[in-house]
Image (tube, rainbow, N blue to C red):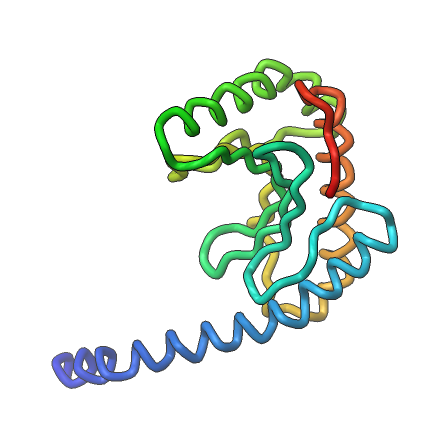
Length: 172
């Protein structure tokens, strides 16, 4: 009996995974435009919606403000610092991150709470972010609540970081 269940699992697991990915992609295709519309109406930093799982807007050289909705990890808003994958570029991005990290208490006070400083597992980029462990893309009945919260948090994050840019901040 167990062997039969294992065989069924191995046969159907890839199919179920593909179905889950298609479902997630369909939800993202509906959610991101709603989020972007709200951010744009409120004058909050927001890039163009693409077919991906995030919306990013470059705000300075090597710095993006992003709304991120991955399939497995927590969703988040973040400042992402990325200068490239070569050692010298990674070190350059790390120096910028350390500058912001040196202002952590001021930034978190302005933001109104603690932030996640540098998402684990990244090797070439650094981030300052607000994570949403409770957010479920599949629960579209709560999208209005989450859109309001996420856009508000992006505004707070952006406002908290702006005074600490080394060079001028711009939005292209």
